[in-house]
Image (cartoon, rainbow, N blue to C red; front, side):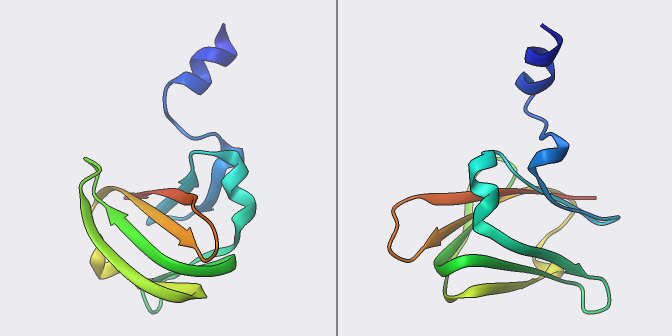
Length: 112
């Protein structure tokens, strides 16, 4: 019962985190998607978030905390850098569509 309650609350477990920093927590809701992400970094000096995936990213979708689509941006690379000025305090979701697949890999971002 305790295990079910801990996983049912919607909070990601430590195993799901791609990045934990003083400014951002980035996680995947589906643990199988974690293997798609090779690197997830926050550069405090440039204030950029960087993602490197194991395939070319066709596009990324950025959703707000209410899952309303804010942006859909073409990428066409396995690396993506996003300026933190794009995010105010709150929760966001990023959807990464890899070339040659139909599955979107989602990350959840909490801006502290």
